[in-house]
Length: 502
Image (cartoon, rainbow, N blue to C red; front, side, top):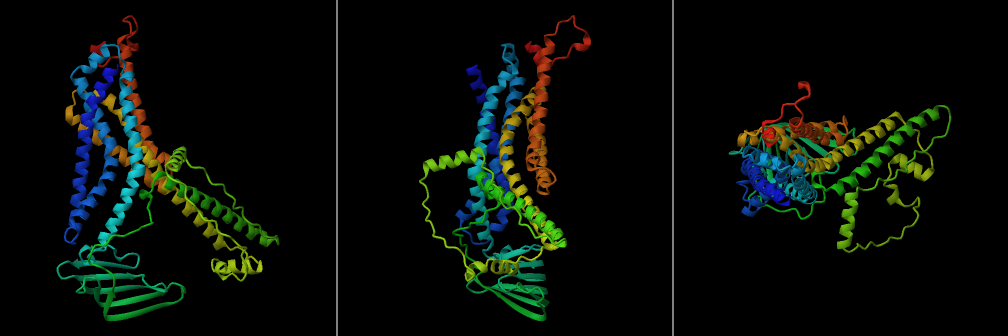
C-alpha cells in the first residue's frame, strides 16, 4: 500500500504544479493588463513596477491553490480510470476509501500550508501593495486622474472629480473639488470648466476654474455657511509631487491586511463595544421612564469580560514568545485626577464636564437612546465584517479537502471526459463556489446571516455532494456482490468499471 500511495501522489503532483503555475500566470497576466496602463508614463523605476506585480502574486496564489487541487484530482483520477489502472487496483482488494487516504492526507497538508500562507504572508503583502499603490497614485496626479471618479490628489486632504478630462490639454468639464485641508472649515467648489497644470518643479498643482460657486462650512459651528460665486478662480495645491516617494510607515490596516489574531483582537473589542452600547441604550430608555415617576437614574453595567483568543492564536503567541525576548514596559506613576486638571476635562463633552465637576447628570433624551443603538449596530457590523474575513481564511483553505471529496467520484463517474471534462468541471465548481462566497459575504455584512454560515455553506454543500457521490460508488460496488436469487428491485446496476473490477 505504501508503494501505491507514492504512485498516486506522484500522479497528482505533476498536474497540481502545472495547474497552479498556469492559473497563477493567467491571473497575473490579467493583473498586468489591467494595471500596466496606469503605471507606464509616470516615470517609475522598473523595479517598482515589478514589485507591484510581484506583490499581487500572494493573493493570486491564495485563490488558485484550491482550484489547482481540484484540477489535479480530476485529471489524475480520470486518467487512472481511463487507463484501467483503477480497475486493477480495485481488483487487488483495495477499497475506494483506502485509496483516498493518501489523497486526503496530501490535501490536508496543502490546506494547512494554504491557511498559514493566507494568515502570515498574504496580509503583509496586501498591506505593502496597498501602500505602494497609494504612493504611486500620488505621482504625477494629472496623468492618473480619471473621469467620473473622485480622485485623491492629496491624501485625506484634497479630492477632485470631473465629468470630462482631456489628457492632452488638461481641460476639465463639470468639476467638483472637496478641500478638507483646513481643520476649521471645509470647502466644496463647483465649476463649469477649468484647466490644470504643474509648476516647473513638478511639485505644485494649479487649477484654473471658471463659472462656479464655492461653499464653505465650519467644522465647529454647524450654523455657519458661506457661498461665493466666481467667474474665475485659481487654486494652488502644494506638495503634490511628481517624483515617486515611498511611505516609510503606514500603521493603518484594512481587514484584508490583518492576520487571524489581529482580527480576533478587533472582534473582541467590537463585541464588547456593542454589548456596552446596547446596555447604555436600555439604561437610557429606563432612566427616561424612571424620571417621569421621580426615581433616581441608574448607571449601566459596563463590566464585559473579554473573550479568549482561539487555540491557534494562543499557540502562535506562545511560539513567538519562545523565540523572541519579552518586551520591557516602563511603569508610569499615576496620580488621582483633580478638578483643575484641564487635560482630563478636555476629554469630556459639555455634559461630561458638568458631571465630572458638579456631580450632576443630565436626564437622558430619546436622541441618546438612538445614538447608543446606532453605535451598537455599527459595532455589530464591524464584528461581522471581520468575522467574514476570518472565516474566509479557514474556509478557502478547507476547500482543498472538500474538492478531493467531490473530484474523485466525478472523475470516476465520467472516465471518458478527458482534458475538456477536467477544465469544464473545474470552472463550474469553482464558479459556483466563489459565487456562494461572494453572496454569503454580502448577506453577512448586512447582518442577515451569521458569518460562519456565510463562509462555510459552500464547503458544506460540496462536502454533501461529494459524500453522496462516494456513497453511490460504494453502493454500486455492493450491488455486484448481491446474490442472483434476490428480487430484481433489490439489485442495483453497477458502474461498468466497477463491474469489470469485480
